[in-house]
Amino acid sequence: VRSVSVRLRLASLTGRPVHDMRVDRVQGAAADLVAQLRSLVAEAAGAHAPGTPIAAVAVGISGAWDARARRVLAAPNLPGLEGEDLEAALREGLGDLVVGGLVVLDNDINLAALGEQACGAARGVADFYYVSLGSGVGGAAVLDGRLRRGSHGLTGELGYLPVGPAGASVPLESVVGRRCLERWVVERRGPRVGDGRAAHEDVDVFALLEDGDEELCEHVAKHVAIALAGVVVAVDPELIVLGGGIGRQSETWSARVRRHLAALVPVVPEVVPTRVGRDAALVGAVAHAGELGRANMVAHRLGRA
Image (cartoon, rainbow, N blue to C red; front, side, top):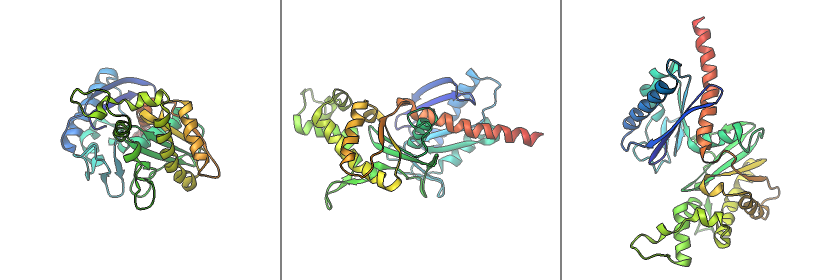
C-alpha cells in the first residue's frame, strides 16, 4: 500500500505468482482502505483461484508498524492511517476470507528485505542490510537470518539518520530523497524549460544517475555512505543491498557507494544492487505470507483431525 496506489499479488503456497493487479489507492480513513483491500482480495481469489482457501494475507505499508502499541507511525504519505491499529482493522475486515483470519501487517521495506532474502541478492546471507533509495529513504536489517523490527518497528529506518556537521545536520531523506535531489540539481544548473512548471519537475534524477552524471552520483553516494557507515558499525552486515528507484541503478553505482564507505569504516561489506527490482516488497510479502500460510494450513488441518 503506497501513497497513491495498491499492488496485489495472488500466489500459491510455494510462492508461484497467480495474478497481479495495480489500482489507485482509495484516499480516506483506515476503514476505506480496508474495504478496498477486501474487495481486491475477494476479486482476485474468486477470479483466479475459485474454491481455494486463502492461507494468509500479508500487507505492506509505506510507514512503520508498531506491533506493541498497535499503531501505524512514521507514515507521512498515509495520513489517514497514522496512529491507527490497522492490523486489527484488516483482520476484522478480511478475516472471514482467510483461514483462521490470518492477516499480518508490516512495513514495505521490511518486506522488500524478505524478498531479497527469499530469492534475491541476499539469498543464503545471514546478516544483511537492505536500503531503499527513491522518493524517500528506508531500510531494514536482517541478522542471524531474521528480520529485526525493534521495539517500535523502526529498526533500519535510515532516512531519519542525520548527516552533516553538528548543529547543521539534516535527515538523510532530506538530502537524497528524489524531490530533494531534483531541487539540488536545479539550484546548480537551473531549469531547462520555462513553461510554468516548477523547476524541479523538469529534472529526471533517475535518468541522470543511470547515465553516470558525475556530480550527482558523487553527491548521493557520499551522503548515503556516511549514513551506511553508522549501519556498518552498529550491526556489522556481511552484505548491503541497494534498492529503490535510485538504489537499483547498476553495479557501477554500488561500487561508488562502496568506495566512499571504505574511507569511513574498518571493514567494508559487499554492496550490490537489488536482484528482485521494483517487485521486492511484493516478493517479500508473498514469501512472508507463504511461510505463515503453510504453518497455518497445517495447524488448521491438525485442529480438524
